[in-house]
Image 1 (cartoon, helix red, strand yellow):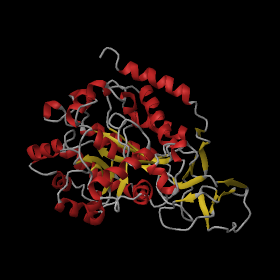
Image 2 (cartoon, one colour; image 1 turned 135 degrees about the vertical axis):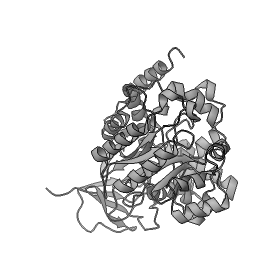
Image 3 (cartoon, helix red, strand yellow; image 1 turned 45 degrees about the vertical axis):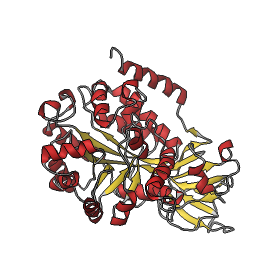
Amino acid sequence: MLTQRTWIKNPLAVFTANQLDAAGGLVIEGSRIAELLSAGQQPARPVDSVIDAAECVLLPGLINTHHHFYQTLTRAWAPVVNAPLFPWLKQLYPVWARLQPEALALASRVAMAELLLSGCTTTTDHHYLFPQGMEEAIDVQVEVVGELGMRALLTRGSMSLGEDDGGLPPMHTVQSAEVILEDSQRLIQRYHQRGEGAWMQIALAPCSPFSVTPDIMRESAAMAQREDVRLHTHLAETLDEEQFCLERFGLRTVDYLDSVGWLSDRTWLAHGIHFNEEEIRRLGAAGTGICHCPVSNMRLASGMCPTRDLEAAGAPIGLGVDGSASNDASNLMYEARQALYLQRLRYGTEYATPERILGWATRGSARVIGREDIGQLAVGKQADLALFRLDELRFSGSHDPIAALLLCGAERADSVMVGGKWRVREGQIVGLDVKSLIARHRHAAKRLFADI
């Protein structure tokens, strides 16, 4: 049986994330990009279908490098709306500890649906809550990922340092090292795919310095090395965290990271705000990735990630929406717009350009999670892409289509393809009843807060 060939023809504008010419569009063959065409160029061989993209801006599929799907159930909760990170966490931990598998599945569907509609084709998730009845939380997420048809890197998070032992989480939310490591090994063996075109991958992700022991950090690093999987954690998000590390370990955050064997190109960090010059140099030399989460950082008043300095040092930069209780959305295009403006405040307009920020959301994010087959439009890469129309009122009068996506506030893709398959068409997710999902998700959110 011959592989289907589709020509996405003559886009209004195209951002390839690698400066290649694709003004005439591209040809998809099966799950990969077979040809990039310049203006006026015809495909080298006949095609089976043609998509007229003359009214659309064409991008590589966006890649989300940090999220907490379950938090879609606790958005805009009044008691924490004005709280910084540590008090925010302390109030939400008891709520999140009531999570059950059905609610997690609904929360994950909502998060991934939002991401898809924003042009995102690959997502990570950092799930670290495993209360009683939630021992197979990652398995629940795997099933939902398959339903939505996205690529995913699901991280087996963990918390092992509870309040009684000097940590931040309540004791009923933590697990023993033996349980964490056994389940991590199981998930890698069962679900982790390798090589180009992987749809499902697993990483190891002890939550943060204030919620896990150094031992679980070291054991996770050893397992990641042994099994060749990636490592993820929160680091240097707030000054409170920095003070915690100094008081408990006698080390600043990057020294602590190094002491437990995590300062490497296998690791990517969420937030990465409070680093000094020497720490930035060491992170860059190690090739440690940084996920910039601008909306969460503004929402919790945590600070600004020093992206220019990290990039100059050699650290890959990607974007992430973070949890939907500190954002409170799962829209990666909106995240990119906020990254543009926040980084302009720190570094100026000439550094924080739309092209640079879109590069973080695509090729940069791919580097952060160790992928070379996604995040750019090039021959042989995976056919992951998004098409955005500029026919809404907000775009009227705009002149540069690429800049308009961020400056005029694009929030919803018209069409999204993952691995050669359309997952969003005409602004609707293929095969998903969104109204029904919203109703069930709202009900689950209310139940989570019952009697609180």
